[in-house]
Length: 197
Image 1 (tube, rainbow, N blue to C red):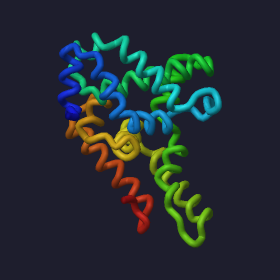
Image 2 (cartoon, helix red, strand yellow):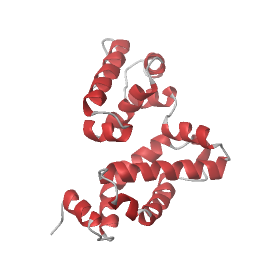
Image 3 (cartoon, rainbow, N blue to C red):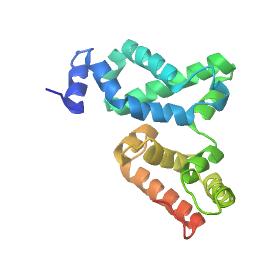
Image 4 (cartoon, rainbow, N blue to C red):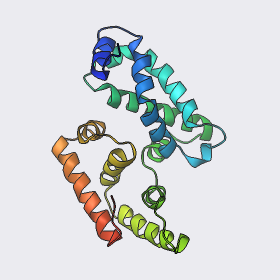
């Protein structure tokens, strides 16, 4: 019988190390999407999302004691391990200082984000309309606080719940919800009639 994520997380906290692999496999697609979106383009050809996830899994195995001593949900904890792994690999391959590496890994440029928002939109006028829309989205994103952009990333691209996004950002749930609504409203305002789904 398949155990629920909650049951596996409880087992992992209780000392069942094998539950790590099962939980990691269940979250692999979500973690892969996060890494793919946030990985510095300069690392293409040297690393891919699967490389990062393999390293993150090994690192998580070494840090199980820290997980058991913490009250973070497994998704938030493994996501943090994965981000730290990305920063370490970024430094290793590009020689960036810690602060700049962390900023590049954790906060993609607004131009990259806008491409994801408009990338699937098509119309008869195609590329011209898409580029105009992308410029409008990029302007809206650039005018936002970094935390508001991050809330959009977490909710839309990583598909985290409001509670999970709040835990990742270290803010209250209602603050995360307010920031998300405000950021989404601003984006919709810039998109006019086209809007976001």
